[in-house]
Amino acid sequence: MFGALKKAFKAGAKEVQADYSHNKDYLEAVCAAAALVANADGEIEDSERSKVERVLSSHPVLSKMYQQNIIAQTAETMFKRAKDASGRQALARELDDIKGRDDGKMAEDVYLIALDVANADGELEPQEDAVLKKIAARLGVDPTRFEF
Image (tube, rainbow, N blue to C red; front, side, top):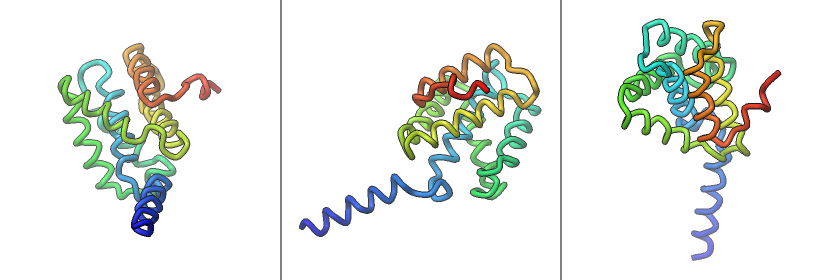
């Protein structure tokens, strides 16, 4: 009995410490945050979709971890959810899936990628800033740590 419990705890510890590339929650949280930022003004335009796809596809870590078609497919799923209140709440719950993992590094990465998406056109709109603050609060990330 104790042997089975020991194996279960070891498996759980390995799952928590899993490499990002083996963790679809990370990609889903990144795409959820990106969709929330892109939808900050209530509408996701084609240019915003392209912006998100460009930022995610050229990201030095994500582009090596996930195939382009998987990134695009996951982002599109999240864009569809962003259209209504229940979908946006589902996106927020995607953020909860990575909160506290990897000593908070995943949450910081998700926030920073959302910030990259918001700044992709060179200007941080007030609506995007408000969404970024909500994302940071949801993830437990202090955005002032990244003001440099």
